Length: 451
Image 1 (cartoon, one colour):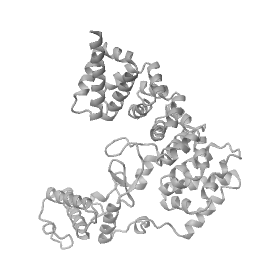
Image 2: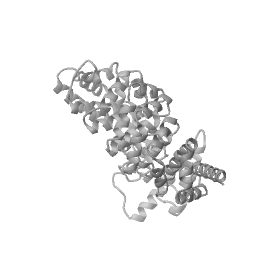
Image 3: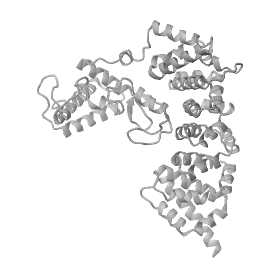
Image 4: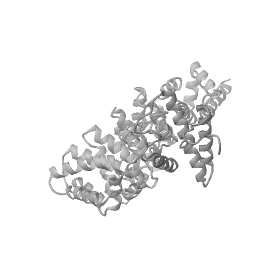
């Protein structure tokens, strides 16, 4: 493809930065659409990116010394460094694995770039970007860490021996257990290779949780927190999720951690259960282990990070009917409404309520709570489209179940105007429009009967 110039020829490009940017977009679109991408297209995309980066740095008059020649698109938006293990969030944004995983482990459930709430925190490897980065860095003489160069190859025998020795230290004295757990927590947080070891080492999970096995009584909050955090770090890997499914003590351990005396341990346990609940096959196991009630208790505690973690887990688990029933029996609607009253994690809480409203017992509880005025108030606030959609869907469920609610809304002129406006709003989601229109129709039917 002529015209982009030759970065190695010293002549640069005759195209403007905007033209180069358009060329990059066009090439990446070609790569994304082709089932088997041609290497020539990939090479051209890399050259175009390099030229575009050169033109941007030329405008700024400087370039970072270490990352010279590396296109800006290959830098992690969080760390500003070359991505070693690029992964994609559910909203399509790409980050380096460790920086974004650290944020998720801390309880952040919004994309750092778009601030969109992440229902699914699964990280999908961006293999295309990884190959582009490897090729670009080799051409520029920029050395990447082993994780990228080895394409998933884990560390050597020395590291494995050290890993095994740490597992063995979890058996003797409490002091040894605490030291080993602290080190394993740090290693599993920073090194993908150590997380992979657990899936390859026979009996690793049993050894890990041995200090807090059911037949032992160890009252040490720090040790419990470290072991819970290790399980969270390990659950990032899909293979480990499957292994944990086959080891029932892992889930029962996490449910026990939900009842820990320390809020931080409860929050970490909720995050780990959220990761494990990505597998539908775990929904029943987690529910039968008794997780639903403790997760609802975490939501009621007031710790923002813990609430987000617990709601993320419940949002997946409540798709199973048995878990839905258990949540209603644990008075989940009332707990969630109390959070909304205080305007705590309103978007997340509305998502959970929308799921719960599929259960008639939950709708009964909403009516007894007198939730309609609160829901109408939230509907009139400046909220994201998804939140409004969930809110009006809950109202529609209540109206379908309770004719008195329809009469209550009909007598509220502001509420009628709000719903009518939402049903015709060009900025509302299609589902929100339908649900609002459904309520308006019910109101009109009640009005015609009265006349």
